Length: 422
Ligand code: NAD
Image 1 (tube, protein in one colour):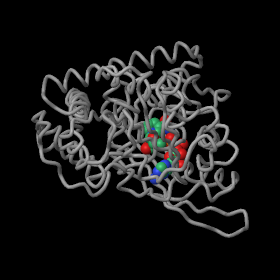
Image 2: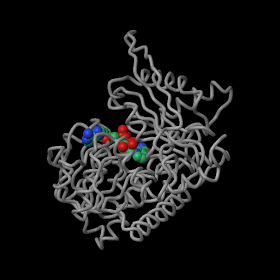
Image 3: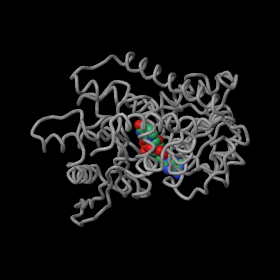
Image 4: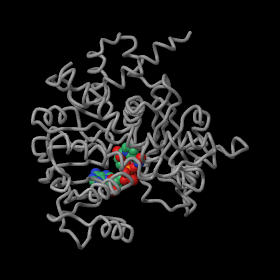
């Protein structure tokens, strides 16, 4: 494998994830049998989630939990509520979680869950019933030593509180370690809510430094203004970066002089969308990705940077806040064009790092100071960043190839030390 390798045609997050694995397997000289084990999830559960709606009618949604790998520890991964959720998306996201946990060296394997529906179309009480029923259905395969869900697209700390309560009720005692990303008052970690964004911004600043760009002369565009995008924009702005373009599912906005993230946050809290913010002009959503900025942070969903728009990306650095935002085809185009792409499994790993800290705190019934959490997070992100750039340099790989190879190597090492049962 080398950075010039021809991309496998991208058709879905799963084909991209499998092609990335195949590339790492080739580079590392891993045997076909082990490759096959890594390409296939260890366990997957598909459930039907019936919901009694507020008007008395019944809707039935499809739910999934995929546990990709347990070689390094219990499975760990988010829970997504989105109409786009399907089994292949969840499989890809679960595999990326395995690599991410290995890359930042937390003792977990990877998992992911999802329910295919739009949470924006539901009341809080309907969301609670969907969450509790989904939890009840996947209960046999989750637990603090088995598989630990966390928030992802469309879910939040309230969702985690309902999961924890449903799981705890089934056990007859409170089990805070069954989820991370919980409210602080239920044993959540200080610093968890903004951990992914803090990591994204920390990595973006290191990437800018590696290209000799001072943050106070730099600009950024952020796609997505949710749990990851909003605070990533805030931390970048606090570091002096002019965040010129921001989008959400409803539209995009642009301000040549930079957008006030505080004012925009107040607008989004009041209206639910970035659209209509009077401190910026409207922008075609597709133009956000090709905005004339130094750093592009896709922080929404998969497959947004593709073979169709990769030639038009003007940012010199892409920091993947979202999972899988760049298709393999786009990845190679960006590489050929000299654009530095910091892969998701490195860029957005801050969330799982602090989830791990939360799990440790929950298991010890002890709370760390926020400064302690942030310091340890920064230290892990910095260590992972240096390990990736050193490996990429030594083996002439892209950062994604290097990050995937390093992760796969660690997972295979754990697998080989444990041996194959029976
Ligand atoms: P979220 O639901 O809190 O926010 C998603 C945001 O993206 C919203 O602003 C939504 O309007 C916007 N969006 C959705 N589709 C869009 C589109 N097509 N164009 C523009 N904007 C769009 O979700 P989140 O937790 O912020 O997750 C975002 C991404 O980050 C996902 O890929 C997720 O897997 C990844 N991620 C999240 C975490 C975490 O801790 N929450 C950790 C690692 C990775």
